[in-house]
Length: 212
Image 1 (cartoon, rainbow, N blue to C red):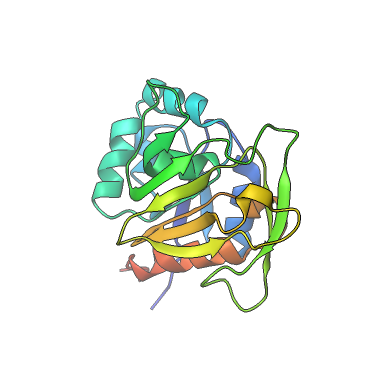
Image 2 (spheres, rainbow, N blue to C red):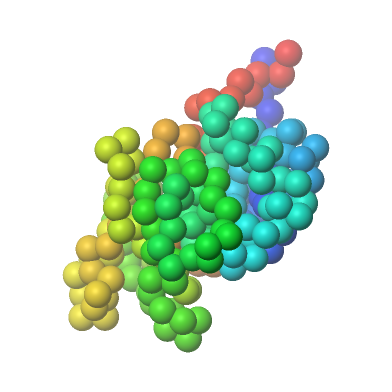
């Protein structure tokens, strides 16, 4: 039996594409950029990186990817979104543009730019369910947070109560619903690959990796 590495696409329209691809490769996946529907068709899972969610929404339409991604998600494709990717995966977004398109794969309400402007970045050590016993150092940049999570959504992490957290304390910043994972922070920027390892594990659970 020959076992192949799962092929994980990284949406390559904007954002931290290279950093996500590097993390995926380090944890045992084959990372490929996705810019066209035919590239999407060849992947076992998809990462939606950080960036600017309204711009990414428009680019999904421009590149003909919006409906193909929605269809793959509805069919059970594993997906992981960080920051703007979390926003795109959500069913409902607060403080977004009226014409912003959503992929609707997570039954959550997210607040866009909840942590403030670009200069108001925030860092915290989080306990993330499924990522091991040691805390994950999380970097938030113009990040969202989850205001409400549906019954089928597993909350993986909340911001701890610290002096620096302020209004962000106890806010939900990592969730999972079935095969879909999302974080408000950017694990691809810290060199800690545990969130990516968790996602690749989700993809492997659902994909026949045996070469026939």
